[in-house]
Length: 53
Length: 492
Image (tube, rainbow over all chains, first blue to last red; front, side, top):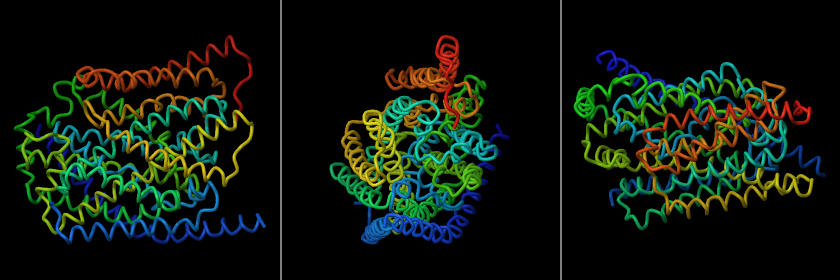
């Protein structure tokens, strides 16, 4: 039972730390990706409008 | 009312911000592919973040906390099959790589390419039923949660949910996937803050030793050793792991809300990378809320209703000033799920049911603009239907198992058809029909059987669905290959 307790302790600690790290990372690197996504959507929309004309 | 003026102001500011940012995205949407898959422009970090937002709602916290509260540390086992399935699919590209390369927008679309339009319609019907049955419990469970946390009287809670869903509906109607991704970003910032705060504050306030002692006291070894009394007899033992591995493998390739993230990603490499890293995040997605359930057991005692464990923990544990922020974080989690699920299930109804039926009768495809209009109308209809239906829901057994089994109506058949359809040239339509039909039988039985039977045989009905789907595929293929025409399905 003791080994399971150690295991669960490590699992919870690991999950918490990795969640924290990944969340910060996603929020930082997400901003330039959002900008790039809007640029692509704008390009596609104007291309589509030009084709329709 | 448990909220202070400061809490209410924080929530109102959050709602206005989300509505405004979501609704201005309409200007970026020009066609159906912008609307449903954001013109396949989503990068790696946005994909990860959006995937997490979609699959985390108040209901996710509630059912995981329920498991932790009822079973102790052994309930943490629920996190591993998800993480393993994500990692294997991401690393190998099994099924997901060919799906991204096909440039489809919904999973049933695959069925019309590999089999025929009628199979697509059949899967689409099961998918819509399973998805909406699954989604219908969200407003009721979450209304109960909000009722406990805020102290808003029960009769006004449903009105609160309708307001929230309407806000979500309006911005998702306008900007589709583009709105979903942008609002997901804002929602994730709050959601992650809330998750970190509850975990940290809970451990500090209750104490790790106390948490361990309470689990030992209430559940003994059964609450700590997942293979007690034996690996086969335990509720979270081998049977559970096999079922969950199969379930999550198929969820990750056939659950519309998840696969839409895959189809929205820039390229195959990005899609696969999102899956590999999601394994780590989805581990935390389950571990942290299960742990909250265990904290609730230690802090509040075992006498309360398990489904109320988390809201009662929050109201008792979180200090007044921080409650508004935590509630905004929880609402963010739910709204992001609502927007994605509304978009996903309405896309199945509009593209795979309405679009396919029109194609079957007229032989023509709808124009992109008409598809956009149909998608928007369908989304509003799905939302109204879900609010109406949530008034009558009653769950027996674990909420988590109910949610699994509603998805299981189409999941085993879909997984088997995808695997065979992609990797075996001789796969036949009869095999697809039989796999889908037989795979749906055990979950259907689960939904209809009384609670004592369904709880005792949940794992068997879970993996049984996959086994029957496989048998159905093999028999159907054999029959059509032996007695049917020799025409093989078209290879894409």
